[in-house]
Length: 225
Ligand SMILES: *Cc1c(COP(=O)(O)O)cnc(C)c1O
Image (tube, rainbow, N blue to C red; front, side):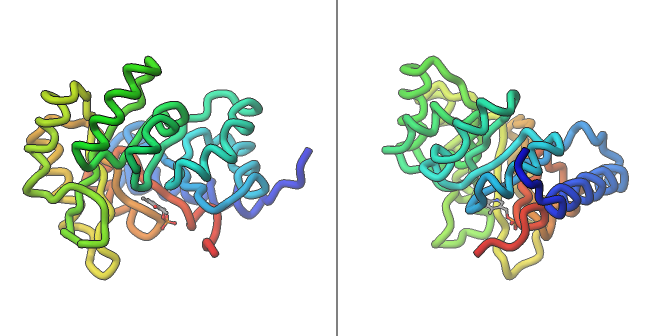
């Protein structure tokens, strides 16, 4: 047995409790919110205690980094569900489709097309979300809010993709509520069920606005270098 970092497992348990509380406050079913543990930059020593504590849903932001650590862990721990939450380059679509079960960051036609091609070739169907750049930040990935309806239609009609939800990352220097509300509104009018929003600092607020997937890294694994 590896030496387990209990602090990490304890933080996981605390976060689960906070998610349950936030669901109760929002009058939502606890089962409606999935915790995606964001393990980017962390290695096996940090990930193992979280797996041992029963967590099976994990997120990474880089395809290559995920390829380096998850295939081995997957053999040891059945039932792992892996989410890609970072920007995707079209030359990595093949690897992304092969490795991930959910991709949160579809945001342009080139990626949509590359994913559609690979999904056919590999006969694999990762679940897909479109990232919305709610703050219209130039450095940030994602479709602009006003372009989202059109892009969703393009994904469906031109590429035959079944987009199931939206993801957003609010600007760091603003309150997140308006961004969560906007994302929820766009999802609702497009009939999308999944909402990936809320990170360590703001997941309770995101749950109020209907988040179905909260992406929590540092509150579980500790600060990243
Ligand atoms: C790193 C990351 C997270 C987790 O952030 P924390 O603040 O550490 O919880 C969530 N979503 C995305 C897209 C990330 O890159």
